[in-house]
Image (cartoon, rainbow, N blue to C red; front, side, top):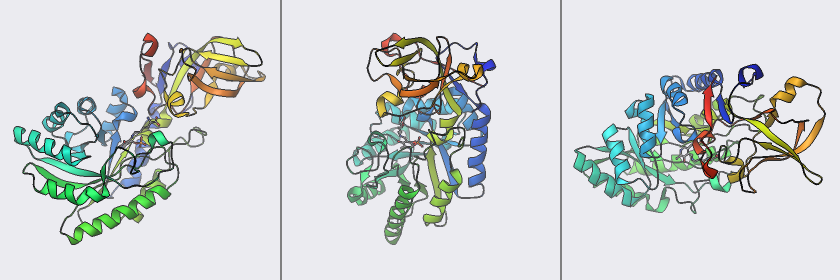
Length: 383
Ligand code: LLP
């Protein structure tokens, strides 16, 4: 994203700034990778539920992956076709299930045998038949941060492989459920292809095993997880979608009538957003200097929650040119020691009022913001 200071200077901060052209180019790249192939991409709404962003993604013909009744309603309002929506979650409430049934969504990703019983009861009440993809816990280590790895036995997600037979039989025994496929998700911010290859191998084994028993899956949903380059957003503004889809399509043994479904979140929106903030104070400590921003961990929670790092750029100093480089801890105003965006950051000499960009913040930034410390939610703008 090229951040043009002249367009940004008047904005009230903190504000999420999204690059419409980059999002469009990203969506176009995905479309060109999957054109003519049996692939359906559902945008993982949780990554960024800004209505304008959602509208753009819906308008480009993508489906949606939702994890709450609220997301289903927002996806429908943004223009996603209901039948293109899938709905996952370990703790769907009866109300949320009803929201999905009434909206006529494509399929539910089901996480337990207990959930099947409730789904069937709600569907019966509504006179509906629900398409069910069983979320399988493949026990694969995605080697990502332990808070965002999901496909290990110890995680709460999905049905253990040893219980899959029972779950399939349960669906078959229920009048208002139809088994349409299998669902997986091994984690997020995965930057190498090996875990996806392992996943494909696991899936091939399952497809083959169940085919012998006369069970066919139309939907093979591999979840999301493709990572972005947080260190070099300008060099790699668009994630390696070709390598990702080629890996999946070359390793998966998809049969006639089978479609690969992906639930991509971060890789679609991550690089198109920056959190813009102004410097409130430059504070001299003992042997340390702090740049104190008007954005805090409530606006961008990833550094505090996962130890994530977003590149920090001083846009005003870049425009001034020639300022000496200094070393700062860049922090927010929140009353928590974890409210830190960067330690020992090398930045051009920074002044009060300078405009700072926290890069690669389009995914899990605005959508995870809170009003902690009674601060207003950050604003947002598409440029
Ligand atoms: N499908 C399922 C079932 C998921 O749980 C997730 C993300 C996705 C798809 C989308 O994954 P993506 O393509 O975005 O990696 N807040 C964390 C990330 C949490 C991811 C949760 N699940 C972060 O800021 O890194």
